[in-house]
Image (cartoon, rainbow, N blue to C red; front, side, top):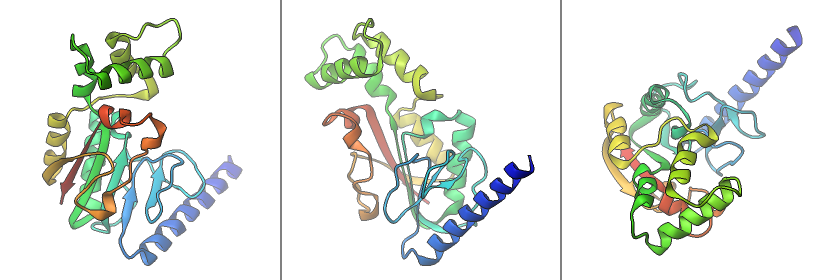
Length: 218
C-alpha cells in the first residue's frame, strides 16, 4: 500500500511537471483530451490511461488546470466513451480552461451516418463502409448487415452514447460555447486544428464517412 502511494505521488509530480513545462514554453497552448497513446506534436496530450509522454487525466472529473489557459482543445472519438453526464462535465471543463476566443474541436462517430446504412439503396461508399466495418470488427459468422453494424457501434469499445450533429451542437451550446460549425475531417478554418484526426486507421474516406467534426468558440 505504501509503495503504491509513493508511486502515485511520483506520477502526480511527473504529470504536474509535464503540464507546467508545457504551459511555460508553448507559444500556442493546445489541449488534447483522451488521445490514448497517440501524441500530437505541440499539444499537451492527456488520457485516463498511462502512456509514455502523456499526462494522466480523467476527463470525467474536473480538469487539473486553471481557468483560461488553453487556446485550443481537441478530442477525437472519445466523447462517445463516457456517459452523457460525464460528457457534459467534460465540455464544461473544456470551456472553463479555454481562453476567451479559444476553439474546441470534437470529432466523434455520427449517428446519422450509421443509421443511414438502413437505406434501401446504399451508395458505393456506404456499402464499402458496411462491408469493411463488419469484416474488420465482427466475428466471421456475422453477416454484413446494418443491424450488426449499428449494434456494434453502440455496444463495442465501451461506447456509451453516439451523437449526431444536432445533439452534439446542443451539448456544446448548453455548456457555454457559441458559433458551432461542422468541419470536414482534417480541415479547419483554424490552422492549428487542421490534420489532426487519425484517418490512417481506416481505409481511405471511411473515417470521414463515419465521423462528425464540430468546432465551437468560447
